[in-house]
Image (cartoon, rainbow, N blue to C red):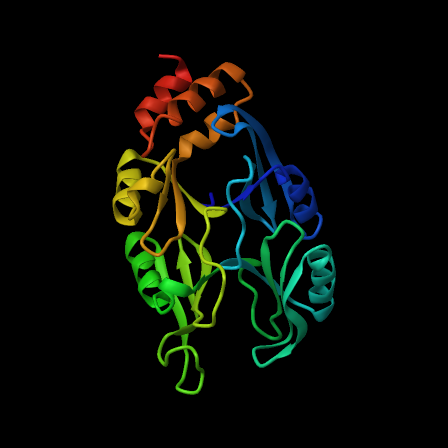
Length: 294
């Protein structure tokens, strides 16, 4: 089971986006669509999908958050033809952040925001072995620029199954970025690859709640652990959500809640929804009571 799931917040386009994304990648499918009634946004709709075997959750829950390029998704491509196809599809109706071209790090690369505002880095990997098709990439800008290394060390210390891979640092001639900060680094958390980088250029964006990471937990002890180690912004704590000291949003969620929220019994779903809306940190015992109607 994938323990960390990217969660993408849309105004009302989650189902449409799910169909679009699953059409682009092999081994992709829509797993579940669930409507959640009685939320602060009214009726929300969650869509769980797999893209190249990797799980994502999308939600339509109102125009409260906006995607930013601070978190993008790197697509590892085996051929330049795949790069071109994905660039054509993902850039249509979107915005080009780096044009499709040859760069020192790849002979075929582009960075785009798609029609929904989600950011993708499309990269030909050349002779490099592709171990994960889509990699969440965190860019530390503005007030947190220069903190990418602290962040990956923090995450590696919080997750028990973690490994910091390569670290590529800026040199003295790479201004405006400070020498020694992170140009690109790899991190594995619970078997899933992530990337991180600093950027000292003037950007008009930072991390947003529109992209968060669900961490599935089997026990209350796990929930308590991640909550205590990651939460750094008390006012952001709501319905299992938290924000860490770098501004990245996480959702600390009981594994059993996945089954609860995909249950097609409307009464059970309503009881669980009413229960979790009152919570900051999730309480597994109370959620189970609500699910069973106790």
